[in-house]
Length: 301
Figure (cartoon, rainbow, N blue to C red):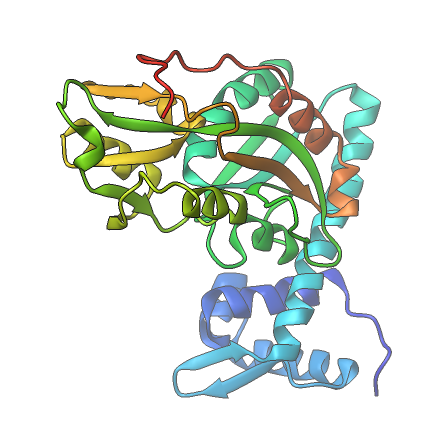
């Protein structure tokens, strides 16, 4: 039999099985017996008409159908939570509850804190939860698509398209800058340091046109590590402006001409979470103007 709706308790049970990786662990988590969890999952599968979990000696793993069902389960449960919370908040004239945010490292370190401080000062009952996710593969936007986050701060190339069901809005475009060890007699002879998340198509196109740049010889974990290594005199780097909010001694920062490469930073939501007051207020705070870091040198590269 198919076409019978699952109730919220069943959706939570499916999520618990996925989160814990087994029927036994989900049963302990939910205060149920293993046989009750197994029976409930079988009932869900029978009504949906597909197998949701592969069973084995190593536990339970969501099938492709199960993964899609879990995405919708998380989104439905979040909307049910928002329905009750926002109705109460509207009556009280406030904003409360969790606000789930996925952000890449430098955005979590520099863009989010002042925005969240202003937001929680206005709404003390709001509880932000920040998940730091590398901008690789599906990146932070994937956390929203899978129902793990209400809003993502992501990098998005100008010609890139988001997966269906997601909305994006611009937050800022920041320039890249040349950073090299202060006082080095010939900084352009140093190795070029890059990091795995630096994959903007526009940046790469600009990079390919610069015959003065050496081939990349050092790949590091993230832009913060690249900046630290420049400060230690190991090499030079092309870094986004936000990264330079981290104070590092012994570096010189130079502009990259009149048309430097830029990084487009956006917020990503679903249509449903975009209607949440907490999400709308966070976007407003994120869009506030912010000062740029001062350059130690403005020599054009």
